[in-house]
Length: 131
View 1: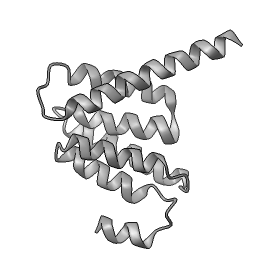
View 2: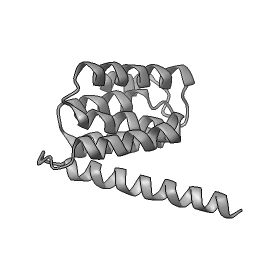
View 3: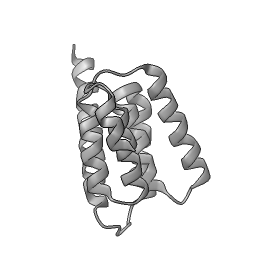
């Protein structure tokens, strides 16, 4: 179904990539999820209502599956690149905290991305304060 959406929607639409990324994240195929999140990040043709819906969806799923701290990565990523960087920082930190010590295969790639983004955001804040 997501493949059909990829063909039917404009190439600039991140929605099918975000859908595929969530499904891979849900299935704990972390490197695949990260690959689809990166593809979504490169797409710029989206409506803010779509992103708000995705954030609400993630929040609901996380509330229902509190044992799945790994899902916070998706919420952080979507906020980071499409909506709210401050919320993204909080979610990346919660993701790292909730998945600390996990031996899940491939999770290290998500941890590394979260750490890099948090570092980059802190550097951006310092640069803004120096202006």
